[in-house]
Image (cartoon, rainbow, N blue to C red; front, side, top):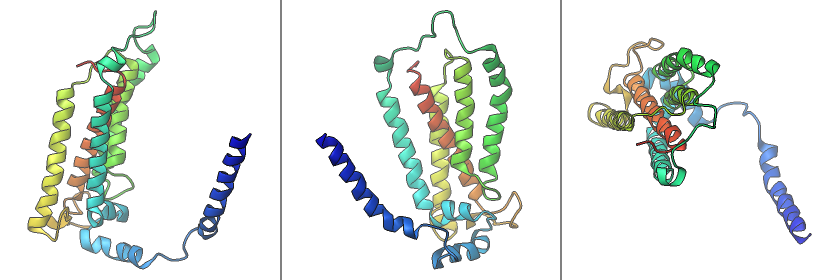
Length: 232
C-alpha cells in the first residue's frame, strides 16, 4: 500500500514539473535567429537543397561524427555480449528448417530492391528527406529479411568489418579534406558545390552521406547477425 502512495506522489510531482513545459509546447510563430540563419544561408553556403542535411552533415558535423561513434560502440558491445557461449547456435524448431515459402520468395524479390532503395535514400539525402542513417537502416532490413527466410544463413563478418572500417576511414578522410581545402572539418566545399537541386551538387555531402549509410548499414547488420548467435 505504501508503495502505491509513493508511486502516486512521484507521478504527481512529475506532472507538476512537466506542466510548464506542456503550456509552452507548440509550433513557434517564426524561426529563431539560428534557425533563420540556417534556412537563409544553407543553399548558398553548401549548395544543399535539403536544409536538414546541411545542418546534420556540415553545420553540426561533429555531432554526426559522435552519433556514428556511439553506434560503433553499441555494435561492439552487442558483439561482445552475444557470443556463442551465451546464446549457442540457433536451431530451427522441430519440423521447420527455415522460413516459409512465402517468406523465402519475398526475400529473394525484395532484398535487392531494399538495398537499392537504401542506397537511393543516402545518395539523394542532400536533395530530398532522408540520409545516411535512414538509408543504412533500410539496407540492414534487407539482411534481416534474408535471415528470417533462412535462419541458418551465415553473414561474412570479414566483409562487414571491412566495409565498416573503409566507410569510416573515408568519412574521416572527407572531414580532414574539408580542413585542408575548405573552412573546417566536414566542410563540403572541399569539392565543387555544383548547382542547387542537381544530383551532383552540395560538394562532398553526397559522399559523406554515402559513407555514413554504408557504415550504419554494416553496423546494424552486425548487430542483427549477433542477435541470432555467433556463427564464426
